[in-house]
Each structure stands twice: as C-alpha cells, then as structure tokens.
Length: 257
Image (tube, rainbow, N blue to C red; front, side):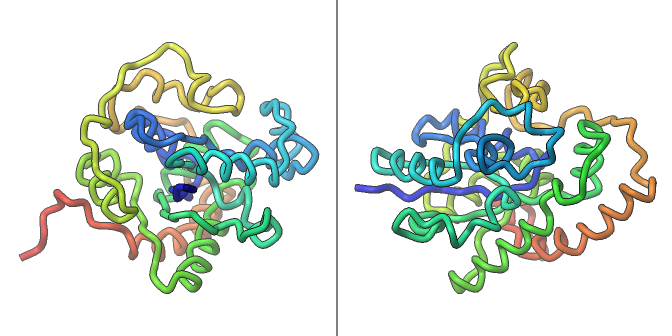
C-alpha cells in the first residue's frame, strides 16, 4: 500500500535541514534531502545559475525524482524537505500518471527574510534574488490553499528553535503523525556530507556539531542596509508576513487571557 509523502516546503537557510534531522532521528520515515534540487542544480534539466552547478554531482531528471519518491512511498512513510523554486514551474508537467502533489501532505517552513537573506548572502556574495525562494513559496502556498480548500500547515523557523518541542508537536498533529520528543536529541558528528548533496554539506557545519534544535551563531559580516540586500528583504517581507499569519501556534505557547 502506498504511503503518503510528507513534504516540508521551505526557503534556503530556514533551519529546514535541522528540521529534517529531527525526522531522520525519528527513524520511522525514509527521508529525502531536497530531491528536486539535484536536477535543478545539475544534469540535463539544470536551471540553477551556472556558477552553482559544479557543486552538485547529479544526473537526475525531475521525472527520475518523482519516480524515486513514489517508489519509496510504496514501501513505507516518506518525508522530504524541498524548496518550491526548484519545482514550481514544473508542477503540472511532472505527472508520471498522476499530478505531482497526488499522495502528498504539504506543510511550509518560513523564516524572516531579514535573517534568511543575510545568511544566504554570507554564503553567496553573488546571491540572486530568485535564489531566495520567497516568491515561489508564497505562490505554491496560495495554489495549494485554493486546491485543498484549507491552508496547509505553516511553522516559523524562530518558533522551531525557541520552542522545539511545542513546534514539532503542533506540526506533527497538523500532518497526522505522532510527536516523538526523543527525536529532538541526537549525537554530533565531524562529517557534514550526511546533511546535503550540495558542496559536500558545507552549509551545515553548525548543524553537524549540534545535538538539538537551538539558535546558532549568525554574526555575519553582511550589511543588511546595503541597497541590493535591503531591496531583496523589502520585496520578500510581505510574502513572509502573509504566510506568518497562517503559522501554527506552538503547543506550549502561552495563550492570551
């Protein structure tokens, strides 16, 4: 029997790989790290900026990924975290005998663009605005909201690190799985390659050293007031704010009287 595929649609640098680490620690889902990123960055259908492509050794096509995910779902529960800008323009074309979203349970992870874009610019000084993913994340959320008739669950990256237990409990209830607090602890490692196919996991050195969900050092020497960066943040912020209005309340969040 085919199992549902849980999908977390995030933006880069939104602590999504840390979320994925929790799901891997649970041990009850086969987890895929940004599977649509592989053909987006490399291979015959690559769409990433040319300067990014050499960091991804992959020859997958988008249809290959769909078949891989659906094959995995035939043997058990599947979780993927991915970015909408990798796949949104192919949403209707990737059918493999059924719509791409068939059999998926969708949710979203958002992050304040003032934090997210500065973090991306620190890693990529030549950052392009369409690599930040906010426009595509909002577009996919709106589309799924219309098609499903109800907004998909949304969690915020700050909630995830400020209240890991409450946020994961709320998300788990929203997508229909049991909450496992024990999955919020893991052993650190010296290797980053287990976290990502991109550039040997070089973006996840702090996560490799971590043992739980927590705020990490983000003292980047990036000027958020620089016109190029400030303009990106200004254009992304309304989309983030619109998604934030749908965010799940953490189960341990104090309620107003």
